[in-house]
Length: 360
Image (cartoon, rainbow, N blue to C red):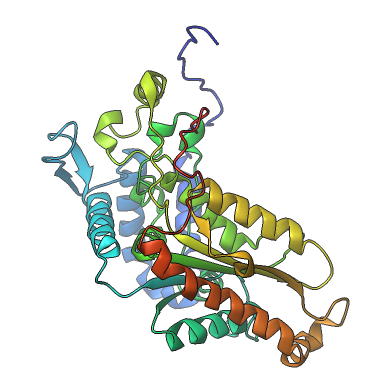
């Protein structure tokens, strides 16, 4: 397209809520009759929350960006800058050849025994097999159990807002969309998760198959990692969320930095009737798009557990499937064998150093 017009399309957003609707939603968080004794206090808090909402106080605490940013005088969110600094420190440790190899093990199932299902997930059991195998080889295994989203108080991953679809430079690394205190979009777990990914030399994802796809807890994390693939590490260049500026920066030439490239990955997908191959391929394609490399042929696994058998006996089916358990161990063993060569620069990269004619 020659000389495209960089207009910003608007008109979808319906505007701010009326006060009565806002008040109703705010007070729903205190539905428990035990809060009735604090009605007056809640009224005062609601007034403060309304003021923050009405005036758009997304980041009430800011600090000057300082040196190293395009606009040192720009007011950055204190929370965002802290997250960015943590990632920089994690990256330094991760690149130190003297540090112990480190693998992030992600349990992508929503089920655990701390809430409605009343039982652990098979994915968690498989992730424990992976952890034990890694640690037996003196590899540090960091666990990320995404089922905490379903059972832990205010442990949240908010949905990706899609800034990248406006322009890649509008998508900041790490994500600057959250927290948004004016919308009560807080307690977001992703800054800690970004740090875990940055600190790792390898990542092993384990997931059940829900309706032919990844569980929602896993997909939330996947979507929010879009900023790791081309995201802008300097929000001052776009004056925060200035869509027009971001579009112009992209059109002037954006390098699409892959912030997690060069790490190794393994994938374990399981199911009971259908969809495992599709999910495994999708996860591997996503990881390779971000510049990760597979840890070998044995590092990618999809298997059925109790094929067309009752849900009620699925754990017993896993108990009996010793071959599957050994295949899962092999995913971890493949990672253990890969990491020394990867860290020594002897493992081939996804793109083999070739420049992409279609960066995105």
